[in-house]
Length: 359
Image 1 (cartoon, rainbow, N blue to C red):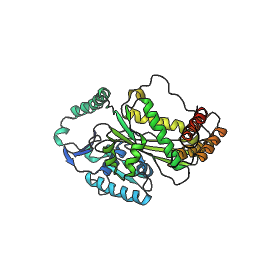
Image 2: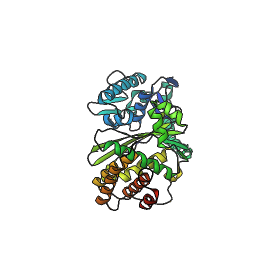
Image 3: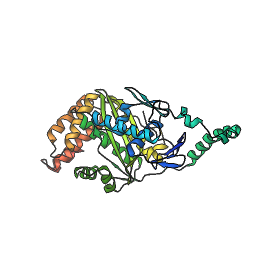
Image 4: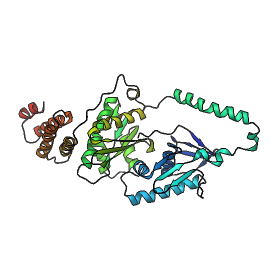
């Protein structure tokens, strides 16, 4: 399920929150709220009245963390959020705890939202007319508001949540595919993966990495195998400078449709940064053909070995050839084999012999 960001300004009861600036106010007075409690509030506001599962919150706000780290972080963030909203005492007015499942935002039934001052109760007709006018005005305002376009982008290597042999190659392949698709959508400047990896290996914090890349925003994501046949990708777009999340998305498909999944992730990101080519494409989107899961796994192993330092090229060729045998129409496997011969031309084979094979 794709996540959509809340509107520019969200009001509930005496409170209002601005997702873009991260400000929470009560009756016009700013309330101090740290980053994680704020992101937790935004996640709940995105689905008012619905249960937001703990697993969804873990993948969105604490990706890659152990269960204990996530559980402690979530409990701490929820306590801070309840204090900021004056909702610490049970029964809770704004945020309901669903045992063993998650949380539900109850802002629509909050007493604070229903209790108006006495002077307002003297004018019920005016209040009713205003209530009907506000949604229409907001829709018109949102339609006319220009979308901010982010011109430069860096895609951090997606992390894998599992520990199996396929997880890291899968995360690496999704990173490469999403980056390539974003380039085709028209991102003006995409930072090469090597530059990103160099900063990560220097043990820089996320904020230092964002500032060091000098881009408008960065993308970080998590790839998880839900089962052997289903893949889930959770992705976050972070504004440069503040490293604040400005968009989140979650996508899940079968392994056979993983190529379509990668394209879907890239399109969601392109829309989030305001690329018109993604929002309003000139024609119908090309559909990615399903691929045999066993062929895709062989392709993952081969392409992953090609990209590793001190690449084991002969093993990479074996996997790529295996992918082609299992799925003769799988184009990425042919591309991977072509890259193999290009790499071989720089190592053990003369260019005169290697280049025709690559072609």
